[in-house]
Image (cartoon, rainbow, N blue to C red):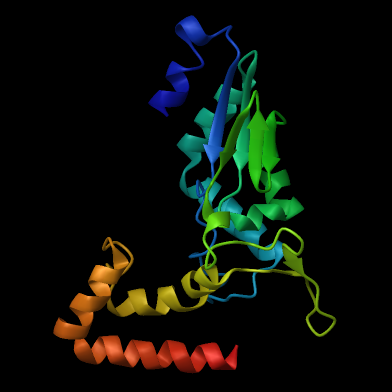
Amino acid sequence: MEFLEYYRTGEYAECEVELIINGDFLNLLQIDYLGIHTYLVTEKMVGHFTKAIIAGHSDVFDALRLFAEAPHHEIAYVIGNHDVGLLFDQPRRILRETIGKKLRFYDTYYQFDNVRIEHGHMHEAINATDPQKFILRDPDYPEPVLNLPWASLFVAAFLPRIKKERPFVDKVKPFTGYLRWALLHDTWFALRTGVFIALRSEEH
């Protein structure tokens, strides 16, 4: 909030200032929908998630709105792998209604003046979304759903359940180090969780 205020007041009040949000500003993968965590993420669900985040961080979104209302100030939002739900129209509309019409979205990258800005997930196979098929439409399912990459499927479907027993599991960096530690010092949990993920992955 102080950062946004600094660049909309004082010497920047009349300057051209563009804020570029380079993905993962919203974590739309780890929020439950009516008490349920699922990998079948619909537009209605992402709209619900977006409203919940705005309500929980109203001061931040007020600061973004004030920034965007300043003369010659704009906001560009490059979508990352954790906020891939912003590919849907409804959450974009909700954010524009909250922040202002000068908010622009870029699905994969933003390029200007020989500068290219991207979140980076498209360069990792487990995190990359399919730019030819961001959204899946299945006649057997009533609503279109996000075509999530493997890592996002894990975060949306499995990680919330794992965190109920080990809340810190996604905070240890690097994660491979935690896996080695868990196999040695938390063996039963590590093996049980691995079997659970393997069995559920086969089901999906």
